[in-house]
Image (cartoon, rainbow, N blue to C red; front, side, top):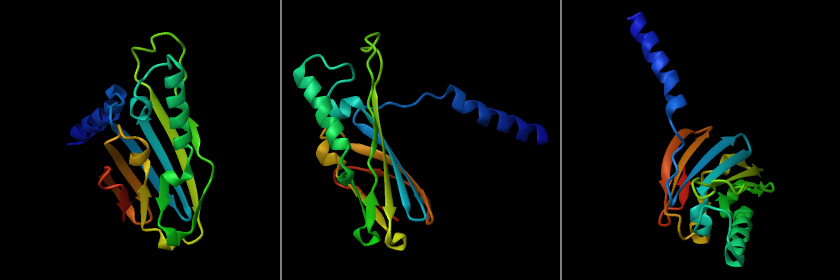
Amino acid sequence: MRQFILLASLITLALPVHAQKAHVHGEGKLEIVIDKGNISINLELPLDVAVGFERAPKNDKEKAALAAAQKALGESALFMPTPAANCKADPPKLTLPTFSGKHDHDAHADIDASYVFRCANPAALKSIETGIFKSFGRLYRLETQRAGPGGQGATRLTPKNPMISW
C-alpha cells in the first residue's frame, strides 16, 4: 500500500511538468483571491480576443487596435465589486506581448492584467461583475476560479452571465 501511495504521489508531481498551458481563442482565464479587505484579480486573455491577431501589428489600424485594447484593460471599471463593499481600485498592471520579430507568427500571444481593489466594508462583498465582454466582442467566456473567506469555487462567465457571486 505504501508503494502505491508513493507511486501516486510521484505521478501527481510529474504531471504539471508535462502539461502545457492551454491557449483557446475566445476564452480567457480569471483568478480572484479575496483576502480580508483586498481583492486580487488576475486576467489572462489571448491577444486575438482583444485585437484580432497574435503577432506584431503590421499597420496603423492594428497599432490602434492594440492601443485601444490596452486602454480598455486599464479601466478599473472593467470589474465591479458589490457596491456596498465600498471598494477602491489600485492602478491595474498590464503585460502585453513584446514582439522580437523572430517566429512571431508561430507563437500564441497573451495579455496578462492584474487588478487590486481595497474594500472598506469587505463583509458586504458578495459578487464581482465584469464589463469585459462589452469591451471585447471576440471573448465568449472566462473560466473563473475564486478563493476567499467563503471558500473556493469555479464558474464560467459569459456575455449573458458576467457576474460571479458567492
